[in-house]
Image (cartoon, rainbow, N blue to C red; front, side, top):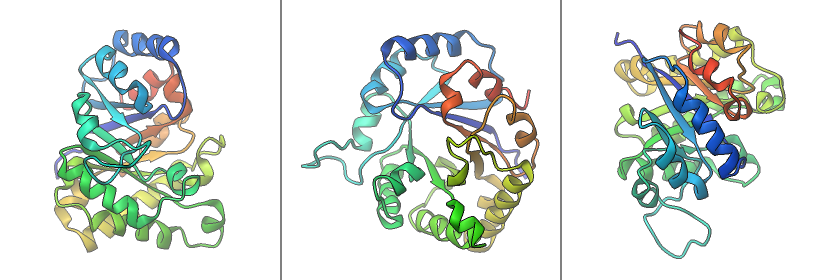
Length: 248
């Protein structure tokens, strides 16, 4: 089995300005980052150019969303072609905030995944259950359905990172225990084995998101099926460096 390269994404969400993001970029550019960890920063679309121009080239940049076609009369949207034109290589799709605040369906997210991959972007595809779904015991059913809608639209899995983010843990300060995270990641890998292939199940990175901090990251990173993190609030702080180095 090929060892999976540890992957840490920072999702800045709708935060920051040129001053504060510039300060954060300086911290990241001057920090000692673990050489075997892939690092990606998800900037607001209006700052993609700024982030790409100023971040060290060893740190990749991601858009936080995109649309499912290259161009057209879609006011307020951005396309993978535009993202690539800014020198940006990744996009986050299906984040729970897109699903639950903006009403994006599994079907739409699948279409976006297909188009982003066809355009040559890497995709951080997000899945995860809400608290009532976990309490009802349907976590697997929910995340498998979300994963199916993504898998149906993927030809080349080498450009996909799956981000498991239990919605009840995002921004709430509640983190899934390392055991809870490992359990779902393991089930997802089994699902990929059964529904995609052994090779994809072994090679695809499944990262965890949901109130990851400098304090919780090391134990989470030690779980065998946790291949990294998608970090929200903490990615705007210097402790993001500690999270990047969780496996150091």
